[in-house]
Structures are given as C-alpha cells and as structure tokens.
Amino acid sequence: MAGSSFGKLFTVTTFGESHGSALGVVVDGVPSLLPLTEADIQPFLDRRRPGQNRFTTARSEPDRVKILSGTYEGKTTGCPLAMAVFNEDQHSSDYRNLKDIYRPGHADMTYDLKYGIRDHRGGGRSSGRETIGRVAGGAVASLILNRLGVNVLSWVSSIGPVTCSPDRFDPEHLKKSPLAMPDPEAEKEAAVFLEHCKIARTSAGGTVTCTVTGMKSGIGEPVFDKLDACLGKALFSIGAVKAVEIGSGTQAASMYGHENNDQAGTDENGLPVLLSNHAGGILGGISSGSDIQVKVTFKPTPSISREQSALRPDGSVSPLIIEGRHDPQIPSRAAVVVEAMTAMTVLDLMMINMSSTMDSLIRFYG
Image (tube, rainbow, N blue to C red; front, side, top):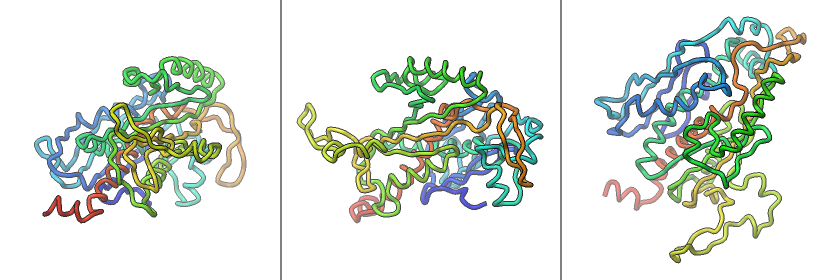
C-alpha cells in the first residue's frame, strides 16, 4: 500500500489497522535534544480516544502510547522516533455479518476492488483508528512549534444545524467540552440534536475550525507546494473530510473584491496591520504573518443502525443493519486530528523555508 508517508523533512509514516495488534507511527526528521516523553504525547491521544462520553463510540480503548525508539533520558536523539498504541478492546465478532457485504458510505467496496482483499473488521486501514499515528506525530510537531512561538488550536465549530458563535468563544470551556465545542450554549443545542439522531438511528456531520497563531511570514513554496495546497492535501487525507476552506473559503464567491481584499491600516500603537483576514493568513501560497484560519467539513458517520440497502461482492443488493459501537458524529474526536495534520504541514514547510535565502544559510553556518 503506497501513500502512508507524509512530509519531506519532517516525515511521518503511519501503520496499523483497527482490529490489528497495534497502530503507530515512525517520525523522521525530529531534531535532537527535544524534551519528549510519553506523558507529552498522551494528552493529544486522549482528545481523540473513544469511549469517553455518550457522543462517541462505546469502544473503550485507553490508547496508551509507547515510545519504542528515538529518545534517551527524556530527550530526542535525532534518530527516527517510533511510537505505538496497542489495541485492547477489539470486538471483531461485531463485524461478522459484514464479511460479504459492503457498508454504504464506507471504503469497503473500493478497497476490495483495488486490492482484491479487505479487512471487514472495522474497516482495517480505512478505520478512524488509523488517525492514532497522525495524532502522535502531530503532537511532536506541535511541541516543536510551541518552542518556536507558533500555536495550533482546533475546535468543533458546528454539528448538524448547530453552529458555534464567535461571540461566545470560551477557551476554558473548550478544554473540558465533551464535544470539543468552545460555545457552551451551542454545545447544549448540539447535544439535544445528537440525541434525536440516536433515536432516529442515524448520525450527523459537522465542521472543525483550526487556527495557527504566532505564524511566521514567508512559509510555503509558491507553485506546487503552496501552504494552502499542502494544508488541503493534508486535511483531505483525513477520512470523512469532504471540504477544506481557507479564510473566507466558499463565502469569497459571494463577496466583492474590495470586501474580500485584506486592506491595510494601523493599530492602536500606530503599527501597520491588516484590517481583516479573509485570506486566512496565506497570500500566493505563502504565509503573510496573519493567523492561519482553516475550516474542515466532515460528512456524517456512515455506520448507522438504521436499515439500509447495501451491495454485495456478487452484485446483489441486500438490506443491512450495522451493529457494533460507532460514533454518532465524527468532528469532536477529529478536531485533534485536524490540529495534528496542520501542525505537521506547517512545521515541514518551516523546515524547508530555512534554506530559502542566502541570509538564512549564512545565519546558520556563517
């Protein structure tokens, strides 16, 4: 299977399946002497861990990370950093009726057509548990970025018809929110909506917003490796993502040019600033120094307990009710995955940017 590696200088390769022995990641390009222990990685994995509340799958996995290589006495060595999470609560028997049928909305059919074999137990490599390796790698990237004054933060901005209000953004509430929503009122409405979804035996979609603050200017290559192009590829690689927007995103289509352009002004100290950020912090594929703003749209969870018509490998169609433990919505556990992919993308391009000018080389080697 090709395509399990991401990045050029900060390179992440993930491995593992939903019902296999373990999932994990090998991260190459981590600078040496970065203070790093399992306790630094675990909080990121805890944010995507299943079984924590009634709005996620009941699969009860502790998702404890184990660093296998790449550190010594609490610091990175510069060698490849390998991390693994061992599965402990697989219920493979829940999937026995799916061996000879393709679940609607899943990758079952396309995997079978491509490889001639598939792991029907939770989707194998196409499962959301594949994101464990991404989150572990993204945790390392975030820790490096923090030391450079760059911070990446994501949150659920909508679930179904319920949207968070920027005026009610509460960062303290976000830290404890079971739905990863920063708006307490919107969270209450979303909880009621999700209960209706459960009663109707269906699921909901939603959006995740991610910002990068303290962003340096000049990051991103201006042709094929534009910062927004790289972010788009990274975020579209997350399962169930159907749209990625930068800045004003699709709203830009209904704006006038003078409205969409980020015009210049001065702040209270008389310093030059941009008066808006419709560009989302990226111009010509290169960071402007403004905050990067990204919104990611997730489709509803395809595994639902309502009866559906499904295709079989022999071409016949049969009714199907999907049993087992499944998320009623994806965004609340995927917010940290969006954060991880954003952090890895930004860090990789920052590393590449170190060689963009002679002055940069002279400062390092001169």
